[in-house]
Length: 319
Image (tube, rainbow, N blue to C red; front, side, top):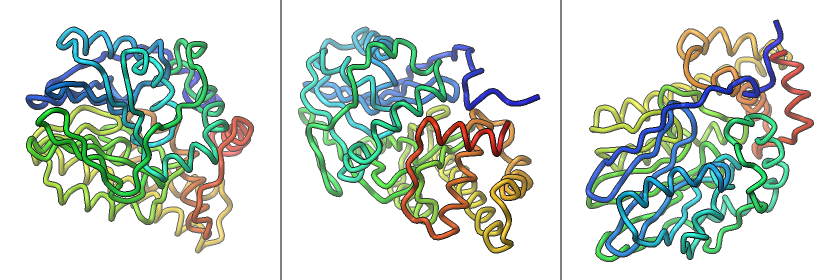
């Protein structure tokens, strides 16, 4: 039987958790759906990743309002993907003043934000509930090059681009005094890594930079919050294994002059035993194999995914 395109058949609502990780940090997670992070400072609130639509963002806003009436002043985009950023307008209506992104993320929005928005909405309709509330692309109001620091009262929060991986513009948020890290999709746990726009060769070195921070808690892009050094390192190692195995399969395929369909079968032989049962694996794998094959073939900058390209690829590899 042909598989339904991407995640169009995934209609089951996930259980949402809102967990306090430190005096100021919270994780908003949902059983493999995209996570968000919250920092409540002395005078304001920061949200890391916004959910996919303003309508869906209302649940997170309600949870924040249950514990504080401080203004949601900052929204940080860990990268440009629509499922992470299109809910931003809901927080701006709550008094938000700054939407913060890396230079690489801004460039990706300029280059492919419109195509990505249409592509993602068709891939995963459940995550875009209330899509009619999206006013358009989310644009940053503040762009940084490598690192910036915000003081939320006395609480120091660092926002940094430590290297490419999931995309060329990945951004992490770090509370050094409490050793809490929000990684975006640079780290996943118990979920597949979406690598359709990845820099696979660079990703492990960026994970090394994350590990060097020695976080005591980490909120991954998908999966449960990781608490304690052991869990944090497990999450980083899991992600390294996923992306390294994927790229190795792509290099094998190119060296052996396989077709993309043959590359898919070879990648499955390496990855299905380890990752075949994790969240969104079947959704991600065709996009991942295509990108690994491209990168191994010398295409360093990911090709733009469009709704049309999505369906052509899916029919060739996963139907």
